[in-house]
Amino acid sequence: MKKKNRIAVIGGGVSGMTAAVTAAEQGADVLLLEQKEMTGKKILVTGNGRCNYTNRVQTPQCYRSDDPEFPWKVMQKFPAEKILELFQEMGIYPKDRNGYIYPNSDQASSVAETLQEELERTGVEVHTGVRCLEIRREKNGFKICAEGKSFQADRVILCAGSKAAPVTGSDGSGYDIAKKMGHSLIPVLPALVQLQCSGKFFKNIAGVRVNGKIILYTDGTEAASDTGELQLAAYGLSGIPVFQVSRYASRGLYEGKKVEAMIDFMPELSTEKMLDFLRKRARNRPEKTAEHFLTGLFHKKLSGLWLKFARIPKEKRVGTLTEEELRHLTWLIKEFKVQVTGTNSFEQAQICCGGVDTRQIHADTMESRLVPGVYFAGEIVDVDGICGGYNISFAVASGVLAGKSAATKE
Image 1 (cartoon, one colour):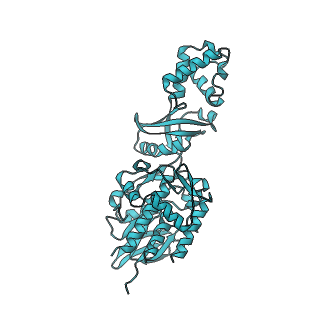
Image 2 (tube, rainbow, N blue to C red):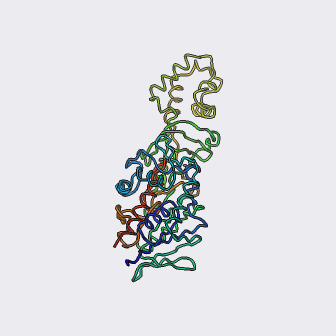
């Protein structure tokens, strides 16, 4: 009888559990090692506790990497349709919100519990509270060295996550394991994270939510942009559009570049149409004071800030506003630029950009090009998706590829 492959999976997040279940279904003898007290801990905080696990809209632009073709090659091997099928087979019925896919229960715990049940169903041997330190190649396979113990395996899948949300287990320890095997790292930085900005005025507009467009510049060149609900905070900027561009801010700051964010608070109007709109608004109610000129159009905190910056007295009648004053207000509304000084920490980041260099990994199998028999999956590699279920999509796709490849390799 042919001997079963013994596969060790390091990390019990989405990618690790998916890889373990896939390998076990291929007939392998699978061992999963998780350093926290339970598997799937990070799943519980995804999608505001609802777990947006994939998205029907899939394009190469939804995934970022220093090796930009790599993530899309992986996703083409196991696209969103297959992720939906896989989750339905496990019992997760999808709820579609304009292409954003959640479990019908609206509970992230449903996804975590279902994957845990799959581990049990497929006979995966799970060890929690195990902190792995090193993977050593030996004559007949690999030795996984952990604190106070070790494990043997024919092949190893490293799914130890990134540095984002370290309280859930993603503390960056997997990077050290990869480096000891000779793998290079693309700088690991917070992504899908809030931006810290200069300006004492932010404390006066904290708490304001407004629809707008953010354009991020690094050394004066546009790096990224996005539109949606922005959240203004005492430290700077938050909200999904800010998260979407944040990885470029992190990278720019790391490289010592000047990083600026420009906010367009009325993206549906061009600058000239915005100016014309304000002219007509002033003519329509000339008796109004400047303090109430933008009431019903923008939040009072914002209009007060713009009047201050434009040096327009609050008591001034809008019918007497000069062309220069209207142009200044238009500029503040359409091109409000602030300097980005930092990002919030890894503790607040949803994911990281950077990680194990994907040029050292085979995209079709997730196997290391440097150490045959070692595979990678999930956030540990240099792939980060935009908001909308893309990071879990990549975790599942890469986990399936790694699990299947490790189990079936001769």
